[in-house]
Image 1: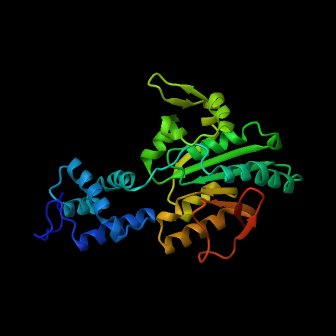
Image 2: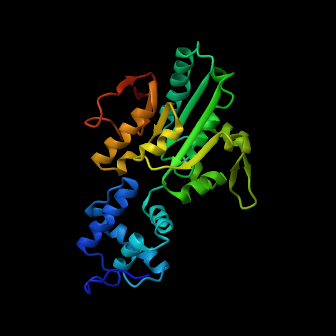
Image 3: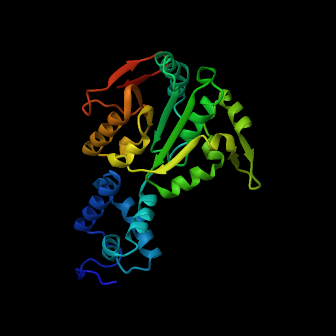
Length: 290
């Protein structure tokens, strides 16, 4: 494989200003995640890890590898896995889940009681290793309000490695941290132990969730989900810059049915990003509605 000529000053593990911004722009185009100057050395460590794994002599060579090598798409997947964050656990942000189960779902069921199709479609956007969509599935399974309804739970992430873990459905202790007693029943009911001391989610829950690799900024791929009733996108937009946030929110708006709900993380808001959503104050939480 022939690469463009190297600047002799860009060799080894040196990440110059120009090369740093070149990597930042490349990652941004593929993920919407914008690394800032404070993240420079974190990014450099992760880039060096892949550079060494490929046996390349410099970070600049690695950059050219991502641009020109025949296997560049697969390598970009490896890089995305390294630079994305997968911090999650089961039944995270309990007040919002309580609001979803006790207020949002009954409200949607009531508003569409005359609809003969009785379908509820939910998307976990940025699902990481799967704890969020599986939590949703467990909470909704057997819910009296959904008797006779078809339930579709979609879950997506940009990281192939995270999705592989999610599809396997095997989790260690960290995925069950901060577990309230009210949720321990779900663990006993819907998980089984593995020989290595972990817990595997039972097929009846695993089969309720359809996982896929999706970029939140790619409106064409999101169209495959059709109309959605609820979108969970929690603690994902915090990694986007303003322009990427607006593009993602625009895509959410286009995919939600009129009256559909958008649930963000508690540290996130649409202030200054989109005025078309209505901030709704429910008993257990505040959520956005189209």
